[in-house]
Image (cartoon, rainbow, N blue to C red):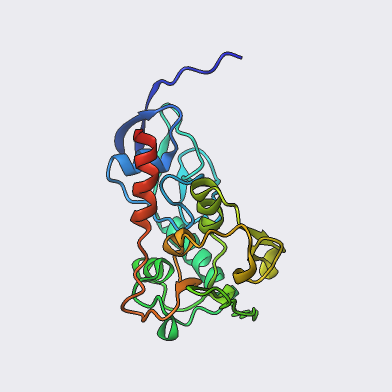
Length: 239
């Protein structure tokens, strides 16, 4: 099988001429050129799933909004990353995430260090645009060091991917669909009885919200250290 050659492609992001490898995504090229596109489920070094849709962009000539983390660049394409239409859709996306679970920031261990909270602040979302659902889940505090609270989970699957792709344990997965979906350990067993979990804590460090946190940590202490994981990924690439 003959593989396509990697070439350099030139296109525009927000009317700025940029270049990138033909196998790059729009988000990757934007980051290389210092152009900010908001993300939630994306984490550099992990596979891209386009789950949260916060990184949606417009392409001139197309009526569709596409996730920039999975869309490959094309020659002469013109990308718009920040328009009133995109802001409107991103506010609705955030509203739906907030409304689905229980994200009461004032009583959350990640208050002040939460990426969901930061995204809402940055975009100016002051209240949910849709009714709250607040489906209740049982909290799993069975692990000796960590807690999983599905009520604060946004199902970004960073924890699932880092466990599988970096730690190699694949102790985590998703059970159910829609508002009933949740992260599970092994065959939906208590975290403490998971035989495949190595207790490395990578899932906790990459979690963007207070869904996964360390026991006994206060809100001021619960600063996620996702750079530990991204540095590890980069070190492995450099070998």
